Image (cartoon, rainbow, N blue to C red):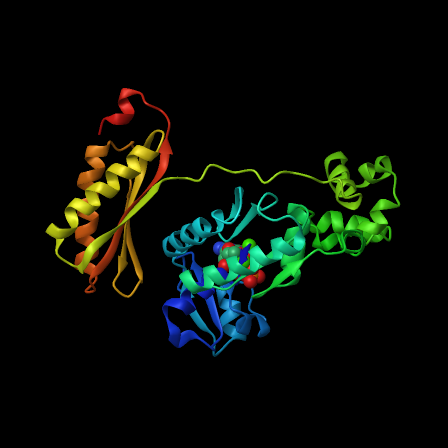
Length: 343
Ligand code: DGT
Ligand code: CA
Ligand code: CA
């Protein structure tokens, strides 16, 4: 599962006036007014040539009518967590590969690819209904093939690898995840363009060209023996959010909720954080967060105090009512020497 034009789609979702317009999300470096790069853009902006990684200055030259918005990473993280928790209910194990990408093992829930397609279709609808986001899903016999078929079906797509042998034969080296431009060039020079070409080689010869580990990776894909499992990475239970009983700006009403969020977040981590964020989900579902970093690890008591300070800042800086409140703990240090606790 891969969320379509993720950061830009979230911006469209929270600001419907952006719909139908080219949008680019910018990471401003802060050095000069427009220094920095594009994190991503919606498909309209991509058609104008504005893509991830491009300098903002250059993007602004090309796209006079493009709407440039600053990146709001905390917001995307919170939404990513929510999407991932929906995804996790569809399989027996899930591997979160990036902020907008996950693999789910459905081999016990679906007897064949057709049934898996059916699950995928329901998952797509579920995410759209609950979070308003469009995603692309690829269904295949292993992680790599699923990812490739998903890539081919972006955006808002659903793809399946039905004829596995034929599908593998036609995979271009440039499509194989984890294979860089350099490897691609080396192989292209020798006329090796697809996994079918790879199969014609002897592994020793391939290893001489691209190194042993890449060679065995490519060979395993070409012979369909690749079977890396979906590895459940530990979900970082660093955040805890609670819904208020009513939307409010009254700090006294919110205090017990934020205390609960801090306490529960602390009980989930193994260590102490050096960073704390208070995240408020506003009545209109927009998200505002304030955070603070320290050079020392925070105790739960100290974090409780800081969280109230941060909450006050949010209420001062924003006039909307708050619907949900949460805390996120970052830079969690495992060390537990006394010095770390002291401040
Ligand atoms: P897609 O999947 O092609 O529809 O479009 P995206 O934007 O979802 O692209 P993807 O899946 O490669 O990346 C997911 C998010 O990661 C994307 O929305 C923004 C962020 N991202 C991707 N590339 C870059 C980059 O070069 N710089 C920064 N800062 N963020 C990036
Ligand atoms: Ca994506
Ligand atoms: Ca992705």
